[in-house]
Image 1 (tube, rainbow over the protein chains, first blue to last red):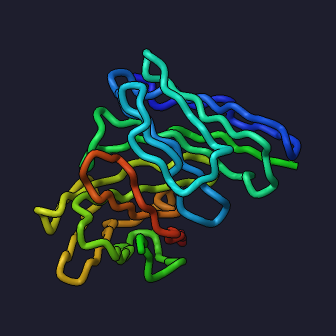
Image 2 (cartoon, rainbow over the protein chains, first blue to last red):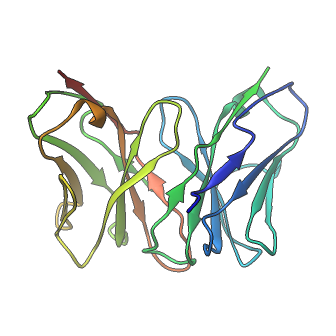
Image 3 (tube, chains in turn purple, orange):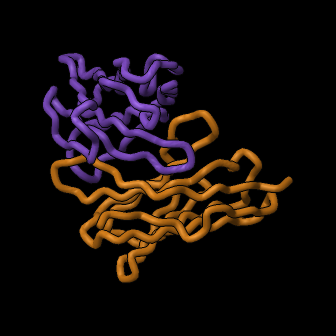
Length: 114
Length: 113
């Protein structure tokens, strides 16, 4: 079975541009969460989506948005990119929403803003 | 505030020795914990989890211990191998309707051959 897949794997953008990152969860998993991992730090929670609805949001500006599709895949969008947005963006897949549910991560998208 | 912290940022062990990685958490409401292994350039890999109604759980070569009294979590790796070299994160979940995980900063485990 395929794990969590993310695309693209690497991306270089210029300040002020917009970026869209994509995630496909493990087959049968209905919950997708997004995390930002800055070099040398642990992942920071951005969003959780379940059944196409936002179920949780971390402390990130409105430039960050996401959505989930009927097939449970998800997109993370970031507008007006800043240098500080350079990070590894991780998608995590869970069977259901709610605490106590195993979360499995994809390989991430390495975003570099220049 | 929310925080999950690690006592040792770097741990160096000899191949074949046992490793112990520690983690402190601050939210007494947290009821689910996961240990992840992250190799360079890869996403975090699920190792083992434990719920707050347990104090110990064993997997293959790994054991997680939970002490709710002092809000402390540890990961024990038996017979550490070079392939175990990575950054290890503990993560906590406060339960309820969210899957949100709060991660610490990580511990780098370096296994010397």
